[in-house]
Length: 364
Image 1 (tube, rainbow, N blue to C red):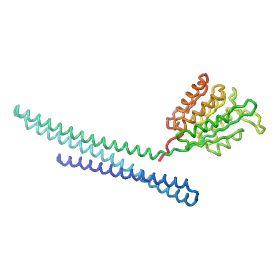
Image 2: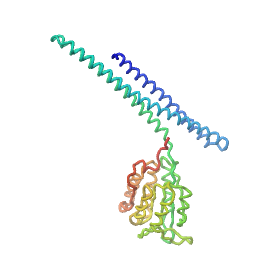
Image 3: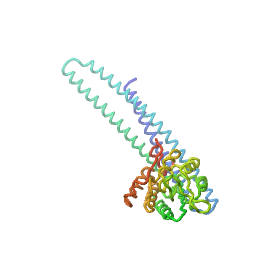
Image 4: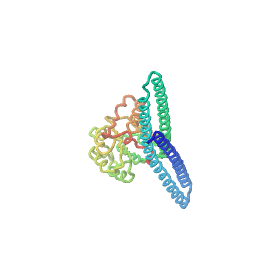
């Protein structure tokens, strides 16, 4: 095959890539338009008090969501076609280069008759090299344009994934006896911090008060929480102080708490013990959940409140559990430096940053 034929193959590949990129752009616009229509339908449903309107808008939202998914699937197919076309382009360009090289060798063989012929040969080689470099620059520029479009499409897809998942934080408090704690202030502060966070609609904050042992599994089964939070008293014997049916202190062993978590909902990813001497409980819980927080000694009411409220604020802004823990410790250091080393974070081995992030964009 001739050099001209190979060049036509290169041109054909480039035209095919340009057409595929245009097709991908059209599907991208369809996906964005479908998302907008879905959001408009959901907004209309949320504003209406008519059950028929809500049902109609809900069905309309589902149709638009289906259209969006189809457009994204088509974009993915086109991406694969573009990748295949790029491979064919590289093969065709290599054939052009090989043919150029072969023809250059013919020219070299025919021009060995003297100094003048040698100079002419060098000039032709230089021109051929410049043409080759120009072609490579043009090919590189085309690839760079394609990469830019790919990055832009990826950004659009990330924008389409902006709706965060909702998690439930189950706050369980028990304060029997006379040494009362400001648990209501802690719950109020956490609620305020969550409402002020970026993804406030993504966190469902539920409270349970005067908790008894049997209330734990009931609440977990009922709410399927992502986070289980205990606030109240703990003992140096690794017991959690709840209350019995008569309101008297009821010591629940570490083994009992860990068992309740282990046989509770699979939705639980984090257990937060905002109680004194709870580090052993937290450490044992990570055998069954991704992460747990405990205290290695007594912690003051104000310190406990500052630490927990800042932790949930960071979670509401989409930070991972380790980053939220680090922010909460910083807040505690500013409140009372002497208590900064009391909270401990325990993590299950081998988990990625994404797996330790509780509030994240919904998968499309």
